[in-house]
Image 1 (spheres, rainbow, N blue to C red):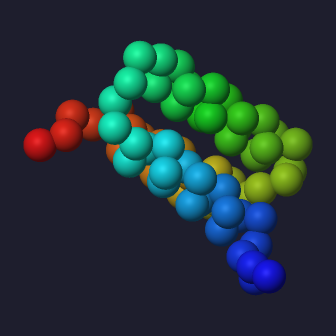
Image 2 (cartoon, rainbow, N blue to C red):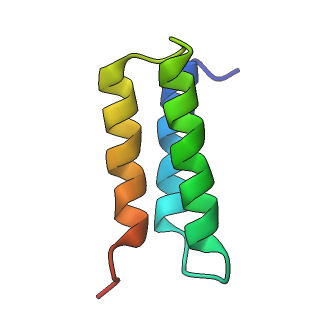
Length: 66
């Protein structure tokens, strides 16, 4: 059984999305994730600091790969 917290799972999932190879529609998926993160923060389900961490991870999805 996993001992991850819900937030750790969110970070892991955001990282998987961000690191995934580019594909058609990836930026739309990332944008939807950003909206979901903002909604979680607005509803008080995550802290502002957690929101910032998640958004930072997702920001990596938009950076060009070397």
